[in-house]
Image (cartoon, rainbow, N blue to C red; front, side, top):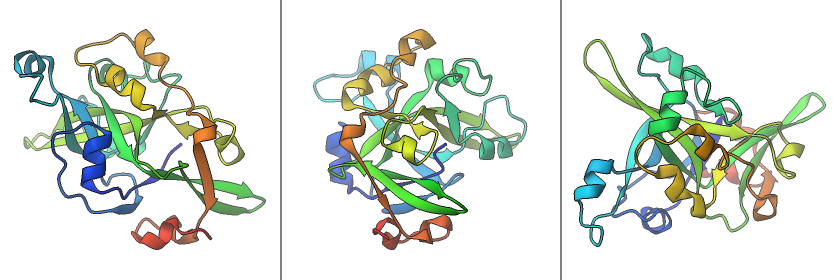
Length: 232
């Protein structure tokens, strides 16, 4: 499970890393929690891509989603509170996720995430990053849900997988972090079979990651402070 993460990188860095034309001013986030807004990258529709000038128009755009996927068929948006993660092993089978896996994939932007390491009766928050501290992308799915009043909510979920040799010492799951070489395949427009996508849903290389014990400030989602990521 992944229940908290960070996104503190400046817009220009995000623009370059994820090959975006523009990135709006984003407030640095040190303790992103479920139901809160998150930044995601999606591909332009196949129709837009076909009519655009590839030399001048970028095919990726940044969207803001609510974290916790609300299926299009849901009667109550509160169902999204339980849909913050989707297991990679079963995502293609679950009614809440299978349509999004085929047609609505996204990159959820982050530069670190938290997991809690159990040590007896104590749980220590661990901050997990790439070794260089660079931003990265979780494999995500998104949906658009329309309320009876006509309000539109765009929401998302993060896909998880088995842990690598670094994260297995902390938790029995980890979010799928996609390498840059997989972005194009994951964001490919149009419907794709689950079998083609499943090979991307694997643990990230542990040699490229680091984990640091941090303050228990992060235990409270109301604490949106730079001190959350400082070593304990």
